[in-house]
Structures are given as C-alpha cells and as structure tokens.
Image: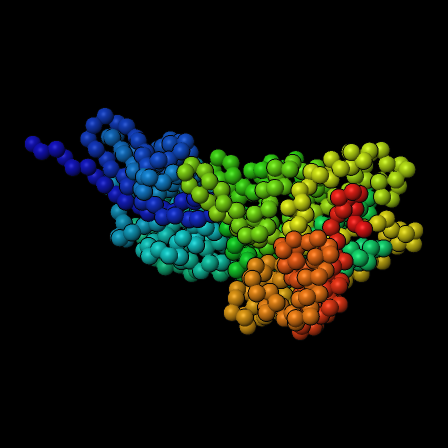
Length: 519
C-alpha cells in the first residue's frame, strides 16, 4: 500500500522588515505520524511561540487541532522574520489543510495576532503592510478590524475581522461590504505656544520665521532662562500642515513602532520630538535587535529638538551628520540593511558654558576657561557647520519681563503659518519650473544653486567674498546661499539681492574658538 500523501494548504501574508512590507507564503502540511507541530522558515522566538497561541485559539473556537504531524513553512525561508502577525494565516492554513473549513478563493492574504480565545488583534506596521497589499492581486484580504481605518486611508479593499470564527465566516460566506472611508484633518489645532509669547527677543523671532520658511537647521545659544526652549516649541505652531504624502510617510514610521490610534491617523500636525540628552545612538538614529526607526525618523517632516546640546554624547551627535545631508539613515541588522527616512528640521539649544553665566554675569561664572573649552568642544565643528542659523539670545530687558508675565498674548502664529505656507508653495513652484523635485530651500541639494535660486554674478561674488572672510567652508557657503534665498522669498523678491545675503551673514556667524560665543 502506498504512503498517504500529506494534506496541504497555502495562505499568503504580509510581514514587516524595517519600514517595508513584504509578502510571504504560509504553507501548512499534515502528515501521518506522531502528533507534533513545527514552524520552519527562519523565524524568531515570537513566531515559534505562535504554535501555542494557534493551538489554543483553534480549540477554543470549537475546531479540532490535527492529532497528526503538522508542519508549517513560511517562505521565502532565506529572509529572517519576526512578529506575531503570522498567527492568523497559520491558523487558517491548518484549518484549510485539515478540511475543517472550505474556501472558494484562489488566493487568501491574511495577517493578525491571535489571543488564546481566538480574538484577532492588530499588530504594528499596518501602513507598510497596506502599501505592500496595494501591489498584490489577492482575491480576499483579511486583516484585524482595528486596521480598517488605515486601509481606508490608502483605499485598499480589505475585510476586517474581530475573531478567528469571523475570519472563517468570511472565507466560507463572503459577500461584498461597503468600504470604510476616512480622511485627514485639514485644520491644525491651536498652537501650544504662540509666537506672541516670545517677548523681548526680536532677533530670535526673526530667526524662527526664517528657519520655518526654508526648513533650515537652527541653533539657539544663550544664558538659562532667555527663552531657547520656548522658541523651539513655537516653531511647531507656525509650520504648515502635513500633506497627504508626508502624512503617509510619517505614519509608516509610527506604525512600525506601535499600533496607531484615531488621532495619529487623522492629525495633520507636524511632529515635534523633544529628545533628552541621555538618548542612546540606537534611540537617536534607529537600530536595536529588530532595527526599529529612531528619533530622527519619528521627527520626519517636523522638528527634532535637542536641548542642552553639549550634554549629548559626542558619538550620538556625530551620527546626525550624514542624515542631515542625505535625508535618510541606513541601519544593518541580521545581514539585512534597512533604510529609514530622516528629513527633519534640527533645532538645538545650548548654554555658553556649563553654568550659563559666562556672558551675562561673568563675575558669577564658576567655569574656568578650560572648562568652557571642554564644554563647548563636545559639539564638533562638522555638526556646527551643518547648522543654517546661529541665534544668540541675550537676557531680556525689565520692560520685556513685565510683558512676558501678562496674559494679553495674541494669535500671531496662525498668521505666520499662512505666510510660511505661501512661501513654501513659491519654493515648490520654483523647483517644478527648474525640473527638479519640489523641496524647500533648506532641503535643496542641487549643485547649480545660482541658477535655481536666481543669483546674479555680483551677488555670487559678494556671497563668495563674505564666506571667505568668515572662514566658511563650501558647505557653509551653500547654506548661506540657501538662507539668502529664503529671506528673499519672505520679502517677495524674485531674485536674491545683496541685502538678503547681508542679513543671512548675520545668522551664519559661527561660535569663535576663543570664547565660543557669537561676536
């Protein structure tokens, strides 16, 4: 008598690798032999633990787990896999192979975590999975019910289920359902801190507006209590809302770290990441065992604020240099390289010395010249060279102090937000006319800046002369030109003029080697 052939069934699934959603095949085979349950396909401990969750779920829902040898293969087997999203496709594949349920679809795509009682739970990475499902041609896509909002944002036709019996019912008695519709909020919330709260610091207010208008990196320096942290928080309130494309890119990052809620899906507010100086390299740029995105990716299209900049580890600060130039960071884990987006506005704040009194109150300063040099030397010149704007904030006057504690603050941030959005649209149109990718001035990495930004020969010579006298590098000169173009855009000027370059020079004066303060 010939050996009985094993019973097979296949269910497709989508798993997460970095920020990419990859399609995999879950194949279940049931053999004659001693009862056993094995899962192969280069999975980690979370997939090996799925065996007990699947077994308990099938039995709790009234089905029989096969009393034979059950082998589940997840292909491609040469790629490392992790996560609990394989629970639902494994359970469906086993029930199909054992003949306990039937399905008329040629191909099924499913993902979701199972509880011991058969509940289908959402898993991180929903946006990346949905983007991968846009490229598939599955007859039936089954996902956790709580992920249907993400699917509606991307217009992916799916079937949301709350439990394993619900998923089985969709397989056996499928009927078309009305697709859920969802859209982003078009209105931003009220600014947490209005720009009118910044009293007695006109230079800082101008620097904030210019930085937001061109998406330029900004460094605040000054004694404690002069409003450096307040100024950084103001920037978020004057930035225009996220576009649909930017929102989806941000949701890809956030969904890879946790399950999204309704506010995360609907809000169009740009992120503001306040990073503490105890941040590790992996937390800053990404990494860890599963190569998750870091703070620079979570600040995508928003603000990354580093307070007390010299207190950060020099190793952490030096990791920012490449992302600031390329707009992305590459992390290698488990022989796989993952590329995370890193397009953000870097805003940093620092004291002139550790006690912060060497400028305003030198007689009260407890820092020696050696201590000041060591404190300021923690920030490398390469990172300082990547800052577009240096803004020194002195102590405010007595009259400004009185105004600062009053409650008669206006709502100027909303007006500035509209103006900055108009400036951004001007920059986008300029890029489209030149046949390049629409970007803001601070993000432009093209070589022919004089042609793109409309600088005449006299203005070019003036900018080069200024950079030479200020001992700026070529990178510093290019940042000076980009900053001049933003100032011209705020003034409504078609061309960059000498006065725009002159104002940009005042924001490009670096910290001196001797005193490490603006001169």
